Amino acid sequence: AFLKKELDKNWASTIKLAKTLIQDHGDKIHLPVDLAANIEGNRVDIPLKDFPIEAPFWDIGINSVFHLSAAIRSAGTIILNGPSGVFENPDFALGTIEMLNACAESDGYAVMGGGHTATLVAQRGLADKMGHVSTGGGACLDYIAGRPLPGVVSLEQSAVAFGIDISHAEKNA
Picture 1 (tube, one colour):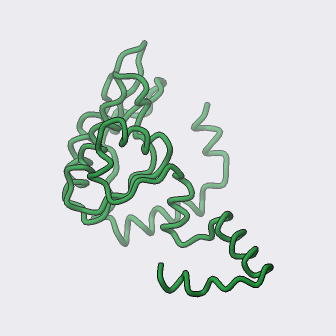
Picture 2 (spheres, helix red, strand yellow):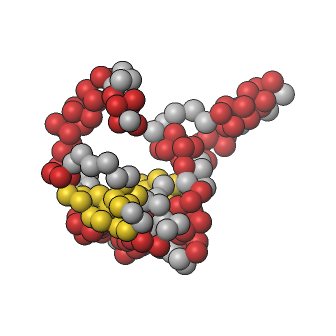
């Protein structure tokens, strides 16, 4: 029902963008190869070729964990925003924990975004192994993408309204 509802929406522009990204950067885009379904309270890893199924997916599958962990460990820059599964349930925390471990083990610069992610990084004692940890997931992605941040825009507007020169701050940032 969820998928049907989503497919009824206009996804044409998103699908077109995804196709372009895969065509232009397919060697750098790593996707799951299996997912972990919650079947009667049990974790069952299911390859993508066996889709669709009725059970909900609560994590990435074990083969995806191996594949994605290897890609993360060899990456120069890593941006991880949010958990990969329902990490609150120990049976479905594997993907999230292993993605965080791979980020910590990588020599690349790792940016962690989102409140859940930041909390898990701190709980696991991995913060000192990350380049940056942000509790603001959406704001972190917006900043990386160069989109305006409402709070910063508001501060800039206040500076203008009160005649405060903040141009030197941008040069030193």
